Length: 203
Image (cartoon, rainbow, N blue to C red; front, side, top):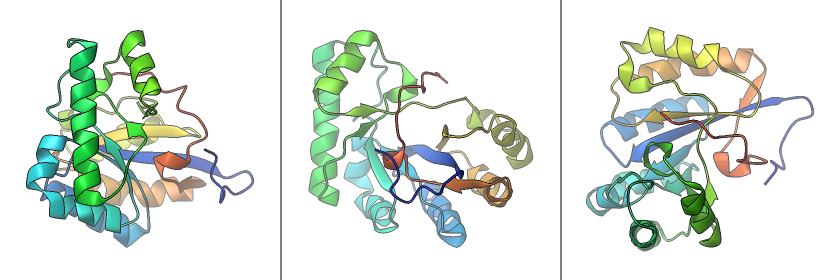
């Protein structure tokens, strides 16, 4: 869906986070996003939601998108289609129970999805969200290096994925958000992206 608030000629950039809810990392990220008035998307694992519902509520209360990231984080290209359905449905039900919403956003763990899995997820009324270029945030080795990789690949409509557990992500966000804004971009929620079709990278 196109952003109803899209400004003429304004480039858009989309921040997403995998592995939520995962405090204290998720909470530190939320603090940075709030400070800079930026919205993002958080893809949640069902097993984490069961233990960290309060943190997940903080994400939703902050005005961020919530997506399905499976229950136990298996590679969808290595399990049966029946197992994929169970992973997705179980997490969808947990999201609904804890947050009171039904999301149509899903990111397969590690971005690993076959054509059959993609078709299955589409039939389940999900929009598959991958990313535009890989920043490998877990490799660090620090916020400065990671920020350089993010800025180096930036382009209009780009989606990047961070992981809540990576300790230098909050500092990286503090560095890149002002710079990206100065470059003429606006940050948008992933649910407002016009299309997911160009996102086909893996980690």
